[in-house]
Image 1 (tube, rainbow, N blue to C red):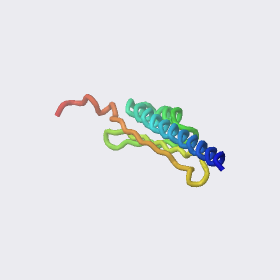
Image 2 (cartoon, rainbow, N blue to C red):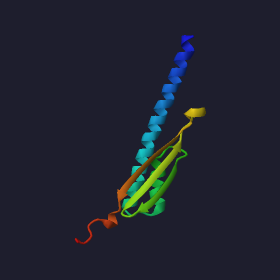
Image 3 (cartoon, helix red, strand yellow):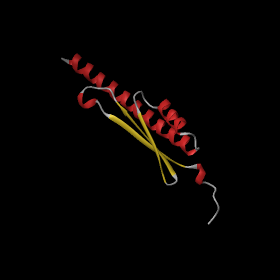
Image 4 (spheres, rainbow, N blue to C red):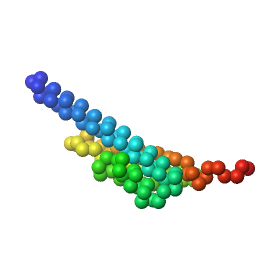
Length: 104
Protein backbone atom coordinates (compact mmCIF):
# COMPACT_ATOMS: atom_id res chain seq x y z
CA UNK A 1 0.00 0.00 0.00
CA UNK A 2 2.87 2.39 0.74
CA UNK A 3 4.71 1.82 -2.55
CA UNK A 4 1.89 3.13 -4.83
CA UNK A 5 1.50 6.21 -2.62
CA UNK A 6 5.24 6.90 -2.78
CA UNK A 7 5.24 6.45 -6.56
CA UNK A 8 2.29 8.84 -6.93
CA UNK A 9 4.02 11.37 -4.66
CA UNK A 10 7.25 11.09 -6.64
CA UNK A 11 5.40 11.62 -9.94
CA UNK A 12 3.54 14.63 -8.54
CA UNK A 13 6.81 16.11 -7.30
CA UNK A 14 8.44 15.53 -10.69
CA UNK A 15 5.50 17.23 -12.45
CA UNK A 16 5.73 20.22 -10.07
CA UNK A 17 9.46 20.60 -10.74
CA UNK A 18 8.93 20.47 -14.50
CA UNK A 19 6.13 23.04 -14.27
CA UNK A 20 8.31 25.35 -12.16
CA UNK A 21 11.17 25.05 -14.64
CA UNK A 22 8.84 25.85 -17.54
CA UNK A 23 7.47 28.88 -15.67
CA UNK A 24 11.01 30.18 -15.19
CA UNK A 25 11.67 29.67 -18.89
CA UNK A 26 8.49 31.64 -19.73
CA UNK A 27 9.70 34.54 -17.57
CA UNK A 28 13.16 34.44 -19.17
CA UNK A 29 11.64 34.32 -22.66
CA UNK A 30 9.37 37.30 -22.00
CA UNK A 31 12.32 39.31 -20.66
CA UNK A 32 14.52 38.40 -23.63
CA UNK A 33 11.80 39.44 -26.05
CA UNK A 34 11.13 42.71 -24.23
CA UNK A 35 14.85 43.58 -24.23
CA UNK A 36 15.09 42.87 -27.96
CA UNK A 37 11.99 44.96 -28.67
CA UNK A 38 13.33 47.84 -26.58
CA UNK A 39 16.49 47.85 -28.72
CA UNK A 40 14.26 48.40 -31.79
CA UNK A 41 15.14 45.04 -33.32
CA UNK A 42 12.85 43.77 -36.10
CA UNK A 43 9.70 41.95 -35.00
CA UNK A 44 10.97 38.62 -36.31
CA UNK A 45 14.16 38.96 -34.24
CA UNK A 46 12.13 39.78 -31.13
CA UNK A 47 9.86 36.78 -31.60
CA UNK A 48 12.82 34.52 -32.36
CA UNK A 49 14.64 35.66 -29.21
CA UNK A 50 11.59 34.93 -27.08
CA UNK A 51 10.81 31.58 -28.73
CA UNK A 52 14.41 30.45 -28.35
CA UNK A 53 14.23 30.88 -24.57
CA UNK A 54 10.63 29.67 -24.19
CA UNK A 55 9.47 26.11 -23.51
CA UNK A 56 8.47 24.00 -26.49
CA UNK A 57 5.02 24.85 -27.84
CA UNK A 58 4.95 28.34 -26.36
CA UNK A 59 2.99 31.18 -27.91
CA UNK A 60 4.62 34.62 -27.98
CA UNK A 61 2.82 37.95 -28.41
CA UNK A 62 4.32 41.42 -28.50
CA UNK A 63 2.97 44.93 -28.65
CA UNK A 64 3.74 48.51 -27.81
CA UNK A 65 1.75 50.56 -25.32
CA UNK A 66 3.03 54.12 -25.25
CA UNK A 67 6.74 54.06 -24.42
CA UNK A 68 6.72 50.41 -23.31
CA UNK A 69 7.19 47.25 -25.31
CA UNK A 70 5.29 44.32 -23.81
CA UNK A 71 6.00 40.68 -24.55
CA UNK A 72 3.73 37.87 -23.31
CA UNK A 73 4.66 34.18 -23.39
CA UNK A 74 2.16 31.37 -22.81
CA UNK A 75 3.10 27.70 -22.70
CA UNK A 76 1.04 24.59 -21.98
CA UNK A 77 2.28 22.08 -19.41
CA UNK A 78 2.02 18.36 -19.91
CA UNK A 79 -0.12 16.47 -17.48
CA UNK A 80 -3.35 14.55 -17.07
CA UNK A 81 -6.62 16.35 -16.36
CA UNK A 82 -6.31 19.27 -13.95
CA UNK A 83 -2.51 19.07 -14.11
CA UNK A 84 -2.54 20.33 -17.72
CA UNK A 85 -2.05 24.04 -17.02
CA UNK A 86 -1.19 27.02 -19.18
CA UNK A 87 1.78 28.93 -17.80
CA UNK A 88 2.29 32.57 -18.72
CA UNK A 89 4.65 35.46 -18.14
CA UNK A 90 4.75 39.05 -19.31
CA UNK A 91 7.60 41.53 -19.40
CA UNK A 92 7.80 45.18 -20.35
CA UNK A 93 10.75 47.34 -21.34
CA UNK A 94 11.09 51.03 -22.08
CA UNK A 95 11.69 51.66 -25.78
CA UNK A 96 15.18 53.05 -26.32
CA UNK A 97 13.93 55.50 -28.92
CA UNK A 98 12.14 57.38 -26.11
CA UNK A 99 15.21 57.72 -23.88
CA UNK A 100 17.47 60.77 -24.02
CA UNK A 101 15.02 63.12 -25.70
CA UNK A 102 15.11 66.88 -25.28
CA UNK A 103 14.47 68.17 -21.79
CA UNK A 104 11.09 69.90 -21.26
